[in-house]
View 1 (cartoon, protein in one colour):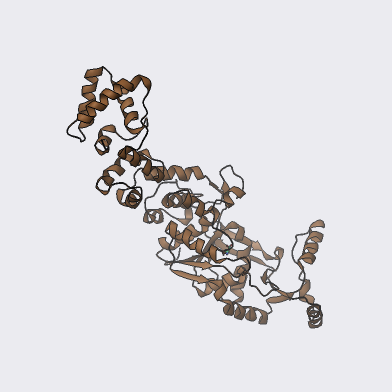
View 2 (tube, rainbow, N blue to C red):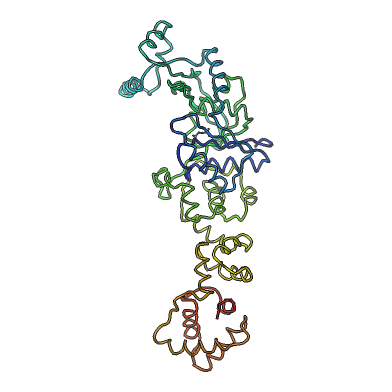
Length: 440
Ligand code: GLU
């Protein structure tokens, strides 16, 4: 890791972020924060047709919810002049060439190559076109798309996760950098941006390994030193299947709406696919502290939603009052007893949605659960509790001791009917501590 690394998360705003997108977002953020560097949010919105403002807003909302703050914000759609200038430079170098094949023609070429057992690499036919040929094609109404002429050599780098990697660019098609409608593909724009924004390290999914080889060649053509690269493995479903539809549709928004604790999600994702145990972390600082890129492995990371929920429940049980005070207020909990109330219920809930259920227990807005055989006993007990003085932490013991003597009931037979009658439930906080909060 270099000192003060600068990383970026670069989503294309063509849909909502899902759990698979969270991995590069979080890893880049952690890497920057751990090294005391900077994290850039870059919106890759050169595809005007598919990019939508609502998705840009959604990306920001998701990152804000997770507390993944950015130091700089950029949009590719605002940098077209720069990309055009770089494209001109590459054309002048003979590294960017016009090609005119249609999608159907390219598909046919691919098919023929595959059928004869050869790799489906673009044959560079366009390089042989004369100016006359091109003029003729354009007169027919064809527009060029622009391909980057790769050096057909092995391109290598030391990957931050995968170690020494090399890609034989002789078996890679010259990538299209500009579409026939003039739209830039992210491949070129990303290199320009990484240079201009001083990005030092790019952490992204292993589906980008081939892109990296071509982008390293673009860095070279532009006369710049490539950034560092690290390719993480992809998420798979807990049962081992690839990023299934199920995971792809598990959006961060849906997790937020389901009440998932953002710190539970981050604690989980920060350690998923690493050699370190997954542990609940109460703050972002602790997650940063426990992070190291070196611990990431190459095996696919198995994503299990249930583990996040379990972590969340564990974290809820130790969550300090200050953290949940606004939620308690929203549920109508009286300020004066809110701290005590939280201390009592937090270990008995699986989600903050249950706060209001327990508040109903305090206000008496419940249906008492009384078995027929306990009815008489509960009536006796009710009279005893009604007359009890003082109404504090000693009351439960004093009254139940007296009931024990009076009725001969003991243990569960004594306590359970009382708990069920007073709370409508068979489990919950210690009754001695809860009782003084209950409205008589
Ligand atoms: N917009 C690209 C993507 O979402 C960015 C990839 C990268 O990190 O370079 O795939």
